[in-house]
Picture 1: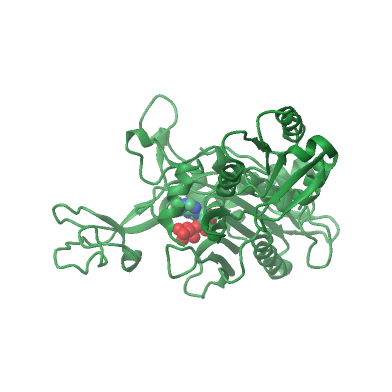
Picture 2: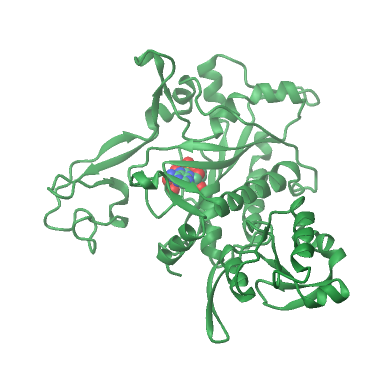
Length: 451
Ligand code: ATP
């Protein structure tokens, strides 16, 4: 698959635009257009439904306790001291001093980067490159809270949503009477001043995360680590990511964060790279985060089990996914060009649950009472599903437009509808056409779209 064609389709059809494009854009920032916003919402809603409201049964068949949270993006800066981000959330950076280049690269990713002056080479490999020594660069965006712009007013845009969950651990525990094991989930924006934003939306400076912190007894933590790793891989598969492109990769000992007992990166083979890239990290974080916040805040963040009379700092399993990265994987996975008869068609084969538009309604012609019936069906379906009405141009062209938008079903009101109250339903993937009774369209569509 050609990335350039996908990027062009995304712009042309309104999935993704460059942020502030009319002013030349801003590197690392992206906007979702009318189709893109529906796709990304469906992804976030599927995650919330399948992980928070109705997670799969636990390793022993038990019901899983999960609740949600929505925290502020700007937090007390002491949070980032305790979490280690203030001192440690940094990448090594090198600059090129050569006139006309002035490139800036991540020192640990030089071989995967491209020299701006000589794109066939990596930075440092072309004779004209003049790279500086690596310097560390903190990835957190800074801002000031209040009118004074001095150090006492300095604050950060959160680089991850996880810390909002840890600092609310006690609030959630006290207000919801949950018993360990349980999880807290959050979807929200995160910001990282990445040195090299690249590969379309894959590495952006503003993005959305979907994170779970699952709190459990230390003795049971490995069981829960394996549970969440398997649940998360399964989730991507269910939503149409093919197994040969999806790779869980257990991090080696040398890669692990110092506090982590184990981490599995769930990776996807994007078309822009020979190596699979991280979609999500499932990390066993031990007692690290709660212990840090306990020390820095001076507040007791232990859990007391009133049955065993044991008091302890829970261990945490963290499945941390990127909503934008998964959206990009879904777009890459869906993009298909195929020959139908003598014509080529481009079709986005989204899983029906994720498709931005669930169905389109067409009157075959704008006369003989067809528009009235089509409008009535459209208004009925619109109450429940995101549907699209199109009465412009030849019906074949209308089908092609819906193929590019990834709409799984199209309903056409035609001459036969006037006689027997049936409509044509056309399937995006098989191209098969059948007739359904008009009165059953909503119920049958609901059944096809249910997870
Ligand atoms: P990478 O190694 O690619 O920088 P990371 O290991 O730093 O990622 P985490 O801190 O584990 O990433 O963040 C969890 C998830 O958040 C990632 O798996 C990814 O889906 C998403 N994410 C992280 N950074 C970005 C980014 N710059 N743009 C888009 N999504 C991101």
